[in-house]
Image (tube, rainbow, N blue to C red; front, side, top):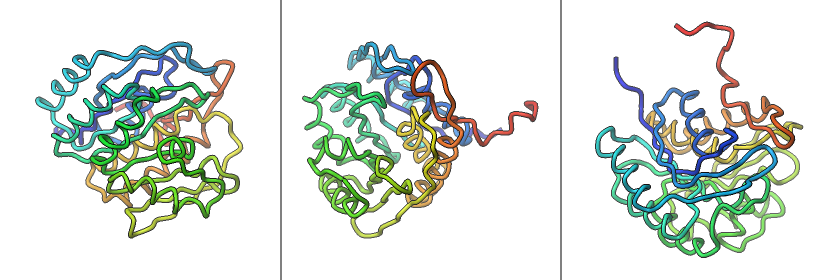
Length: 268
């Protein structure tokens, strides 16, 4: 049998299973690709928030990456929590030497507002990581953190996209999920614009949406789709996952990564 497309996530571990590498690998499985992981940090995390975080040594991150890429190979790479300037710069260097599209989710804070990126690492994200990204997927808080641009309405999305593209990525998806009304995202390379709209579901259980979207984009790119095709398909997938999000623990539950799978059918 032929192996499925291979996608690598370089991100932190979420012990609660809703975000981070756990969400990435679930997304990749649901979308029919082989997911692999480089763990950059370990978090003690649940539905209520992040109780602790410990980044891994640069040597451990580099060794995991080389182990996977040099033997198995990759068709796409997705980055998430990178924690420190040293890890950001190391991962950027590794990505720069890998012939595969890179989807960068510039994770700054968790769903609960817990910081997942040192303030000292922001400049490294801007100058080292974003310039080598195929697609970067900031939410509105991350746009402000990276560029200083505040998005208060749909009309601000173009200005936000231009500010992020100024750092050099090929494409940017400005995620407008924090705005009121429809869930609208803007995908652009500075020339073509793609406005992606979806219904807004009254469901507070949305832990892991950012990780899930970026992993879905990487999965579709690994399958040979163009960036606009991959982002549109990923938006559809994550919208379904949000609609099916479920309560877990005492706080914000996760999206349902397996929403599209027919669980009533026994495995073959």
